[in-house]
Image 1: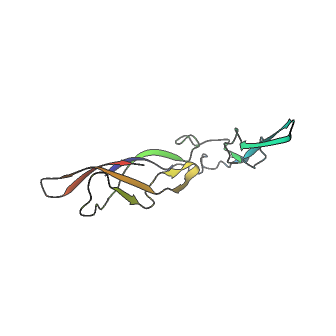
Image 2: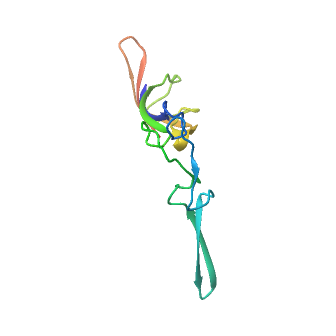
Image 3: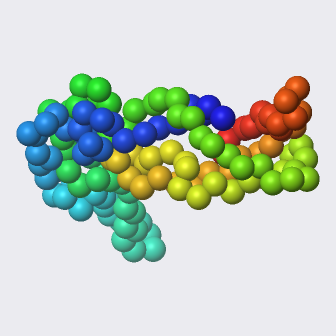
Length: 135
C-alpha cells in the first residue's frame, strides 16, 4: 500500500538547519519556549502563558534553515508499506500499525497510525486488495 506521509529530512537529519548550522537561543523567550503576560484586574493580577510566537515553543531559532525542509525537519514523500490483513477483515475495520505514522516536527518520533479498511476486494489471483484511509 502506498501512502503520502512525512519522513525525516534526508539533508538535515531532522534538526532543521543546514549542515554545520547550529540553533541559537530565542531572544524573545530566553529559551523557555513560552511568554507570559500579567494583567491587572479588579480581582488581582491575571497571568497568562502561551507558546513563544518567535520560536513556536521550541526555545531555539535556526538562523540558517535547511533548504529542503524549510527548517521543519521533515519532508512529504510517498512510502510503500507492507500490511498483513487478517482473514475475515471486512470494510470499515481499523488496523493498528505500530510506529508507521508521520514523523513529528523537528524530526520527532514517528507516531502510531491506524488504517481504516474502506473497501476489500479479491484479485484474479485470489489475493485480497484493500483501499485504505489513514489517520
